[in-house]
Image (cartoon, rainbow, N blue to C red; front, side, top):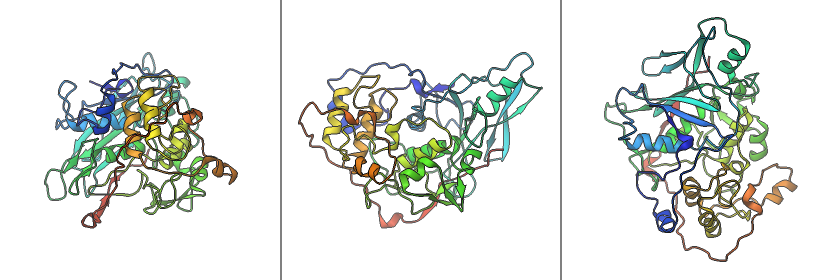
Length: 412
């Protein structure tokens, strides 16, 4: 059955978040409905012929992690026209199976308003690809009305070179390496991968961004000049045009502000991934999606989880999240701007603890328009500093060999 990740607010099933487990004990988990205005991602596993993602009653770790990763995009507040075939309006949704390079056809797919349908499949992908993704294609089976045509082609958003909005698409995950041996995937969200595993969360988040148009849409191409990305949000954050690798990824040396120089993380949408490496979806990645038309909350474009606006993610920010947990509608502690304070916000805080960024006032004085999170103006109500360990990111010299993390079909 299709799955709406916008309605998922339970903690990850794969391992308890060690720090969160202690602090959430006195808090009651609350059932949260999707917020009006936020998009939904409906994941369809009906083409998962290998059973890689399990079932809704018995999900595999791959399914749980994919659904958690999809929440990186559900805070977007775009209005997407529903696709409702009927009468003289008939169409076929099409998506590529990369293992055969052929289309799967879904006649008269109904897509609810503000929803993307993502087909999740697992295949033995060619070459060294860990995953592949692309937006969906379509065919009209009859002459559509203007409104129906607009809904199918770009969800009512008009010119695709200015604003990209597909009906959905496909994400394919590799199951075997080049030697025919089962791929070593790391699914645990609470710890970083070991040196002989690839991080599943990193790969599927990266791939979903391509489905959302990064590197493959007309709106993205419109902001490319001299093999660099020139979108306004990305340039403001990066301080100029952002170098690209072959047009579909950030160049290998690109890192993401507004973190301090020397501490800036690699963005998710770089060209490669090392064994044992985890990449979070960075402000620079979000800025590019904003440039191709997605309505990205400002919290995702600044220093993540810096709730008090002091350019440091520390115990004070964690305390704000802890006190706000379970709140909604602007409660302090909302790291991703979806107007809920939940487990995902806590996961972001723990992953960014110790991060430092530019003082936003200094950036503004320099003419760099970095939006400040809405919660940044909120004052701390206590002086407790939690004694939490900062997770050190390390990279073994044995894992310096990287492989291409994906390959993509251009939107047709």
